[in-house]
Image 1: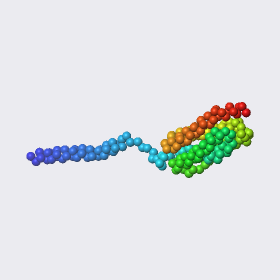
Image 2: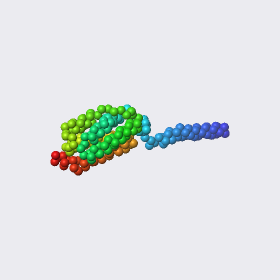
Image 3: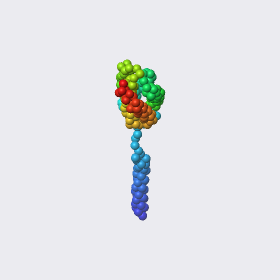
Image 4: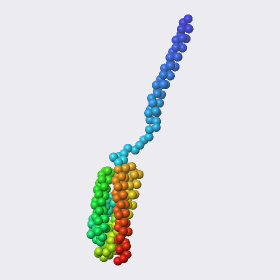
Amino acid sequence: MVVHINLNIKTMATTTKKVDTKTSATKNTSPAKASTKSTAGLKSTPKPQNKTGKMEDSEFHKFFVDELKDIYWAEKHLSKALPKMKKAATSPELAAAFDKHAVETESHIDTLEQIFSLLDEKAVAKKCDAMAGLLEEANGIIEETEEGTMIRDAGLILAAQKVEHYEIATYGTLKVFAENMGHTDVADLLSQTLENEKATDVALTEIAEGFVNQDAAAE
């Protein structure tokens, strides 16, 4: 009888041990499963370094800012050249177009300064060799043409449209750069300036084709 009791006690102990082992195993594996579920499907994303999400160490970003400084210089010097081109123009229509664009150019400068602010960059002008050459050419046309002629106006429109085409190419490319880096606000501002430059180019074409080229050919 004693032997039978001891066997039952041994059997109960073994059963209890198995239950405890199973329970322990369940407890040990549950947190791992929970952790797996909580992290499943999550993707790591780079943390933006400022409000525009720019990566300060990016070589592309540095190049982008450098080109902004270039066009900033170009706009500032164009704003000084346009009054001289207005004064040299023969037709009132061309003079008015230059006057209008001088005002618009000041707004372009303000827009660029706003862009620099959005990028947490200082608004610094870097000499634009392309614009320097284009403005030098415009001065040469004034010096080489006779005052009060349509030939001068035709030459001034040529010089002005070279400037506009350079600016259109620059702002169009910078807009795409901004979009690719996620600078949405900056891209929108560049797009506004781009459309304004295109409109100026169209206005100059209308003046040239309206009467300037024909009158210049007749002189």
